[in-house]
Every structure is written in C-alpha cells, then in structure tokens.
Amino acid sequence: MLNRVALYIEKNELLKKNDTVIVGLSGGADSICMTHILCRLGYQVIAAHCNFSLRGSESDRDQAFVEEYCQQNSIELHTTLFNTTAYASEHKLGIEEAARELRYRWFEELRRQTGAAAVCVAHHRDDSIETSLLNLARGTGITGICGIRCRNGHVVRPLLAVSRTDIEEYINEQELSYVTDSTNLETHYNRNKIRNIIIPEFQKIKPGFCETMAANIENFTAVNSIYQDVIKKEKERVLTKKESTLYINLNKVAEFVEPATLLYEILKHYGLHPREIPKLLYMERGKQVTTQTCRISIVRVRNERMLAVESLSN
Image 1 (spheres, rainbow, N blue to C red):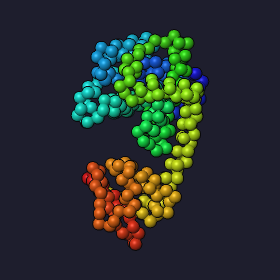
Image 2 (cartoon, rainbow, N blue to C red):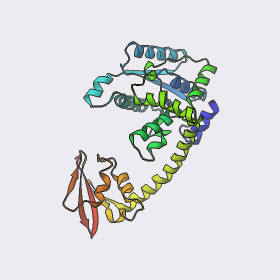
Image 3 (cartoon, rainbow, N blue to C red):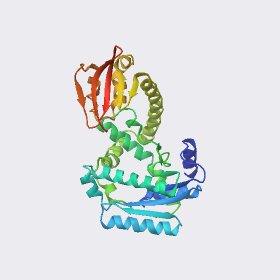
Image 4 (cartoon, rainbow, N blue to C red):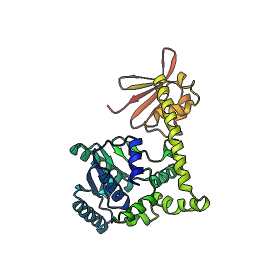
C-alpha cells in the first residue's frame, strides 16, 4: 500500500520529496489512512479539519477526534466552523455543493498562509468510479467519464490508485482508529445510492466490476488527453480576441470533423445550455443570444462569418 501510493505520487508528479502539504482530515478512514501514509513517506503534514455544522453532536465528535489524533501524532492542526446551511441558502446552492465551495476555498487560503506545496484530499479509486457513473447519469462528455482527476490546481489526490478495500485493510493492519459519518450509509444523496445500491448490483452482474471500471477510466483518461490536445490546437486556429470580445471563425469551425463539438468546447463555460450551442452554427445575422456573462451575435469580418462573444462582466 505504502509503495503503491508513493509510486502513484511519483508517476503523476503530485508532490516532491519532503514537501509541506495540507491534508483534509475529516477523521474518517480515508483521510486517516492518507495522513498516516503521507507522514510515513516523509512529507511535512499540516492537517485541516472542517466542521460543517450539519450533523449536530456527530460533527463536534469528529472535530474532537481529529484534535486528539493530531495531538497524539504531533501534527499541526487548523480547524474551521462553517454555517453551511446558511451559505447554501444565501448562494442558492445544494448542501453538498455549498460544503465543497466552503471547503476548497478555505483549503486554498490555508495553503497560501502556510506556504504548503499542495492540498491533499483522500478521494480513492472507488470515489472516482462513483463520480464517473454519476456524471454518466447526469449527462456528460469524455472528461466527465474520466472520474476524478489526480490533480486540480494545487489540490492533489494521492489515494486514487487504491480502493476502499485497500484502505480498510491498511487501517486494520496499522490498527488505526477513525470515525464514521452516519450519512454515508443513507441513500438520500445520489452518490450514496450509487455507492450502496448500484455498484453492488453491478458487482453481482459482473464480479470484478470496479477493477474493470478502473481500467476503463484509465483508458478514457488517455483518450481525453488526445482529445484535449486536438481541441487546444483547433481553438488556436479558429479564435481571435479583441479587447473583451472573442471572435469564433465559423467558416473554420465548419472545416473541423465535428463542428458542433468544437463549438461546445469553446462556449461551454458561457452559461448556454449544451443543446443550444450547436444551433449557433446556423444563427442568422442580426440575431443574438444573451446569457448572464456574455452577448453572442453573428458578424462578418473580411468576408468571414464570425460568432462574436462579447463579455458582459465589465
């Protein structure tokens, strides 16, 4: 287990030897396992614990456990208390999304304050499989079915090479204590339904399903690397920018093997519904589409048919 994590970190260049790292330490088995392994591998570990005020006395129990664990193991600890429900209501977010925003914003603030090289979170292989299936159910492209990335900016995930079973075995071998989040056993959340109901059913249909899915995700990720490289080169070919307006050369877009896909990759972050983006290929001059962030219209520049995407942020 120790060697597998070390090799995964090295292969994906997640951390450098003796780096100082922030670890998201909830007190659960996954984060305890990750913290224990990173300490054994020689990294300078600073623990960060979020109390989301969502589970009453259980949330306070988790924080007390983490405080005791860090004291016993001489690990520097930072804690924070969030009113997650109020934040979700104020920003019109679901509870899970609100907690995610609060958590990662604070992690990044703490990383900058401490000068840490990275923030380590304890997602593992099975979490990535759940994410891939959840994205498929919602509707997604190739990036979505790749599951969880091992790196997202300064956030890294050293345990993606190991399964939940691997973690449980390591915890037992090392005789480590941890706390259990009772909401993980509920089926109220979609992710829990996939974890506790759907994946076990797939395992009955195809024993070794998780191993197969892990291999699939590895293949999808390789294909996605090629795809993203092609899209990057095509963007350079069809895009120009002047001040706050992005110009998309629709004549050049039409030359691509999948024009609608290329246009989607260019415009997917502009607040348009995915099904509306292909229609812009045929939009008539004089018409326009407005979102919260931009105004899109058809213009002609040197006899080229262009889609002008004007930013409204200013």
